[in-house]
Amino acid sequence: MWNKKKKCLLSFHDISIENFDTISPWLEEIRLLAGTPFALLIIPDPKTASSERFDAFKKQLKKWQQEGYELLLHGCSHFSIDSHRLSYQGRLAHILTHGEAEFAGLNQADSATLFKRALSFWNQLELEKPKAFVPPAWYDNPFLSSQVLKEEMIYEGRFSIQTKTRRYFSGAISFAGLLKPLIPIAFNYGYFLLRIPFGVSRIALHPVDFPNHRERIHNLIRAALNESHWLQYKDL
Image 1 (cartoon, rainbow, N blue to C red):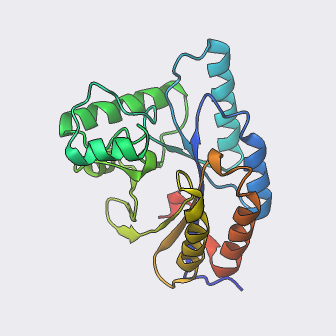
Image 2 (image 1 turned 180 degrees about the vertical axis):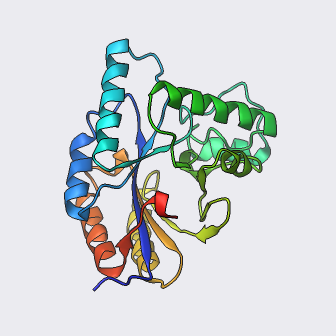
């Protein structure tokens, strides 16, 4: 019996024009196990892809959307821009994430410009407006959340999810970028988050999780099915 008071979000991060076809089997595998489509976090930057590759990317994204997956905006290119002036915290985040924390430590103007660029790339994909924005690695700056909320989008941070009217406590269950000795600790933390009776849990999967953590992830999803019920971002 599901605990109807406990809700859980399921998402797959870092889907880009470079990997959308190779990760498709993993998405189907997860969908069959979870029993439902889930959120796909899309990096919108087309980079230097050919027009044929870009058209294939757009076609696949539209197909996923038609199948019931939620497509969320996940940064702009997922990599920091060297020309940006960063705060001390931003420089540290840049180092810790090997340059993936592109919104970390930006001033208000640079944050707004980069966010608008991400929206521009998204518009080129000819998709419905994304319901939510998730900065890469959940690193942000003091201005980003308000810039996102102003666009009538949900903002997902490291420990919370914000709408214009509500903030949810939400711990992320994620294994990307962790040293090998920390992986069992992260899974135990995930089981703990699934069991606590408050907040919205998040299982955030990444391409680097497969195939090494496949069986553990399967067990975690089974636990989520037992402890809670799936929630979509549009229902927040």
